[in-house]
Length: 304
Image (cartoon, rainbow, N blue to C red; front, top):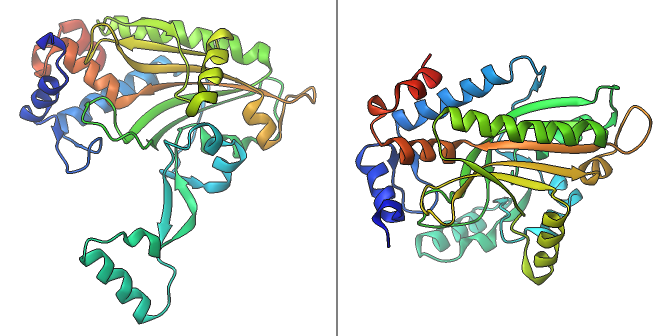
């Protein structure tokens, strides 16, 4: 294996330089001060880039109403990625002791818990759609969020996290409004990453749908060019890492949440998102672990 793109070597370098903090569970490492500074500086750069767009700024917790996941049929397409929140609902000392004893003995104590009304958010845009119910103004709506996302993909590979942040913009309106907007952001995102001197490229992509039926969904998604990604070599030269995605949902979410365009038709939606941890890792991979040694123009953009 070419050591330039050795996943373990890169991970060890991130740890050695204090950029990430190892934990016992794969894909859940902590972030050091410098790593977080890079994430925050990139987020500030996105803010400056989109300052004139007029996006509404929302903030949501990392959990959402489980009915949202049910309405969009997430468990039909991504059951392998979901994370449900369970808690103890017992009232007796005996049942509480049973739970504690099971945990102390290393048993499967989750079977003594029950599902709550919330799940871990699988996509940063999901909590936005229920808030848009009703008829949109003629210009549609544009919302931006920076949300924590969970996907059950435990891996030792440093760019594949179970819990991570997405900076997203969500555009809802007519197809004629949202598709050109999505395509505009694809070019804008490429330009932004090239300005940061990252070897970025774009390609048609598909989501990791579940099972054999998922393969057909993925082919259809690619054929219709509903999803694009921006890719940067981080742990592989031949299979670069997706650091941004650009998605056209057609009327999938609007149908689920009763969102209508001003002409009364079912609205369409699109979203674009930067994977914040992946952007940071792409910068460290490309420019090195010491931010003081990064190219002057890159530093000027991130630390103006």
